[in-house]
Length: 537
Image 1 (tube, one colour):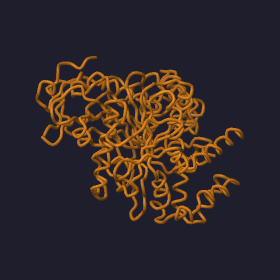
Image 2 (cartoon, one colour; image 1 turned 45 degrees about the vertical axis):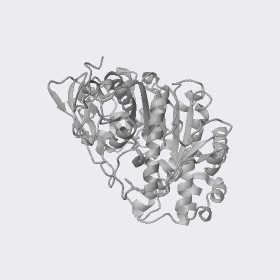
Image 3 (cartoon, one colour; image 1 turned 180 degrees about the horizontal axis):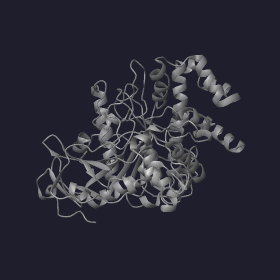
Image 4 (cartoon, helix red, strand yellow; image 1 turned 60 degrees about the vertical axis):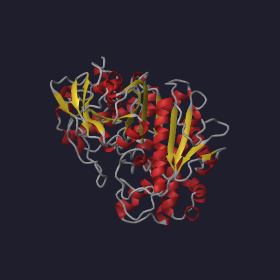
């Protein structure tokens, strides 16, 4: 049943060598010029911010390098300008979403480094992987000057290949090289770059935290069990991302079928010349051809699944973690309280200009759950939640995000330090959803402006600014020590007391315990439905 709900909801998710000579930062001056392995870069050091933008971490994946493992960035002479972000990876963009504009530039494997303004060394490093369903987004959308300066952390945001360029899976490609999942390979290349170069920016390569939100959270889960990611990070933060990929057509045969249909639609049918044809296609043609739908529960997913290639993604990460495989590093895992409000806003408000009606809501329940719709209609009643739209949003929240996150925490807690949270500011200002006058609550990705310098539709209140500072401190403490720490309590997760830090404006001491989180999101119900689904096939 959870898989059926994923099929219903996923359609609306659009929205994730040596270091060379000692740097000037270590020499005592916070210089705008830093030497990397490929050459010198000149960033911004204007007294308000120290940042190095659009730094290449890999060669442009163009021509024969399309759908191949990323190669090292080519060296340059002189000083490279790093005062502006590089191009976003090819994407159609998201209409109405700030900064998410169309791009056809494949020379996009860049990262951005933000550091504190004062000189320093051996600082903890936070590498952030953006969301966007693997089809949109860019690292430059998440400026981190305040996070870096407030907490003394070096923050790295990353671009990676999107859409078909990052996820195409064909037997021809596997014959060239076993490793597929090029988006994840890009992220691994960025992590390797961090290990080789981050000391020049004042960072500590032995304290690297990998964090990702939405699609970036799913990628972070995959890296926990990817052989090529072993040793590249020392803590992980999974934000609104799934470790369970069982709802995706990730088995090679199914992924190959999806990609084969796409290639044929592009004009490159199966045959000896298929890869040459695809590599010669203009980017606009690749973006202009919609990815074909998968089968089963992922039939409506507007994007590309990861594929089990026995190399980058050796299997379903949640299953591998249950078997004790994967990195044993401290993990933070969490969600927003009203993840699904974004889905209903995009599905109805942005398309029709109105909220879902009771008749439409009941029809959705019946089509997705059949006779069980009667049960769900009682648990997720419009009267109980205040409206059909809020009831549907709560159903999306619980089955797509909140209860899968509970499974991650329960799986990891017995084997590694685990910390769970829920972002619960229901007055969080909107920053990307193209609707107005809609109660979004603590919506999907609503916590990101509290960590990054993201413009919002309205400024924070004083209590929201205080929450933002606490969250920055928690994330930075976790990056530095493996524990979110801070003056307010944040207990380690365990299966008996199940503590979740509730992040909301106020004194900052709120902790949900003894199943309160699971009860508020009806996780027992979804566990039962999931068991029934597995029993019935």
